[in-house]
Length: 150
Length: 205
Ligand code: SF4
Ligand code: FES
Ligand code: FES
Image (cartoon, chains in turn purple, brown):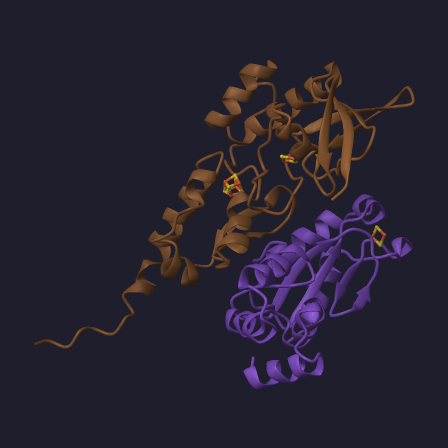
């Protein structure tokens, strides 16, 4: 990520230390992860110790310290989806992408996470990619869906 | 500063405004065990070992003495059966993480804590925060901090700062009740040592 863009975001928050989390969130959503240099820059500009930036960026699950794939795959493992076969969907995704929950593949195509209930249990098992919901997933359907992403 | 009078373990004790219960007890020569407390650092209240029982109108209440302000007319018990039982459990839990820590072993003896009560999960660090807070508050270097949370929380050195500042300081080492801190530092140096060699080579004579 371009550090001048980081500086812009920091300036928008008047370089205030109390805006640390807000700044991190903005960078996370723009860049999908927080590179080391970016955290160092924030620490310098806001004059907060790097240890605190690290503490916060590792505390909240919203932040990633490793690059994310172009597509974020969320598989619901909530109770309803679970009894309707979410594990099979998860297995299918793991087989096709070669990654486990929390990981990203080497081509940076997919990142995989499991979640607990997306709030549409009647559609279970549910798969969500970049915010788009796919319901009533079977392993075969899962494969078709994943293959439609570049 | 106004004077405060309270009773600790049946003794009338004087304290001044702004003191914690722990400080009031210490000033009166009454010992309360602590792990995460350090005079030079802000109260933290992390380990809960310094817990004491307050008696109020026939009720009793547990408070953490290193963060609880001394107040007039408080009746404090530092070694009630309840307090001892809680300290014992706290020690047993801490010993599951750092079974070989000497400070903990000594306290375990005193409170009859069984170091094998809980399954071992040797993370060594018991999250007292002494190293992190000392480095931040006293040395103002922030070379070491906490990362992650819950059961995965651990201390972590910032290699660039640690390589520059820690070698000649190491004041946090003796504060650590376990050996987690030294281990983490040695590991950081081993993994990040190459950063040291980046210094420009001396021109040959
Ligand atoms: S490394 Fe030692 S001093 Fe630092 S938080 Fe852990 S137990 Fe406390
Ligand atoms: S359990 Fe999957 S959407 Fe509710
Ligand atoms: S010494 Fe009071 S909570 Fe640790």
